[in-house]
Amino acid sequence: MFKSKLAILLVTLTISGAVSATNLISPKEYTGTQGESSIPLGGTLSYFDDTGNQLTDKIIGKDDFSANLGYGAAHEWVGWITTDPTINFIFDEGTKISQVLIGFNRMESVGIFLPKKVTINGKVFELKGNEIANVKRGYLKFNGSFSGSTLNIVLEDGDSQKWIFVDEIQFISPTIEGTAPWQTAHTVICENTTQSKSVLIKATKSSNWDCGKAGLSINSGDKVKVTIEGTKY
Image 1 (spheres, one colour):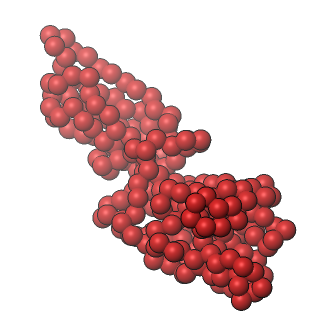
Image 2 (cartoon, one colour):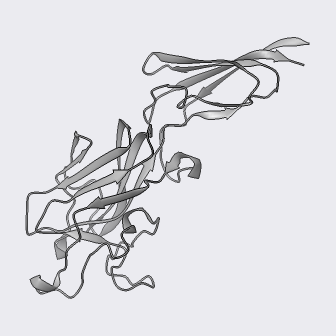
Image 3 (spheres, helix red, strand yellow):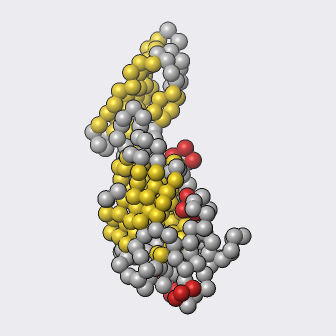
């Protein structure tokens, strides 16, 4: 029998590229401003949320927003022009979110622009309008510490002549979890070195640990040190 301490430095919260499915969380439902049709404006397509879950169905559009991917031209996109949309998401109680990803299209030649302002649960993010290249589809990432059972997103451009197009909204949970390398009683210390905060998970024989559920505040980009102490046979 011997004492053993295992310290792990985690720098995995700077999200880029593909995101592990274990970090993605889905809302229970959402409601919001319905998309609009271009037909009254002389166009030929409508940009409604036909299924009621198009913004969270993990189906994304193309750079050419009008592409038909099997469901009809531009089906993947929800669009607004005469109004600034508000979308309200419902989650389980106690949900923590460290990053929101919103999939936008920008094609200025046909009047599709990025919003000037994105507000998430009251936190305002100002945009310059060039965060996504013209004639491209892409995600914009908004970092914060959002918690609770509701999350509210408002997209604003204040211009009834410009479309805002969104195909998908994703949510990243600030989860740091793992399994202890032994089955005897052990203590886990989670320390957010960026925020100078820590939590203690008291001695337990359960091999699984979760810093977020233990109450550690974690934002995307934070550095977290996890120390596991116990007796290994």
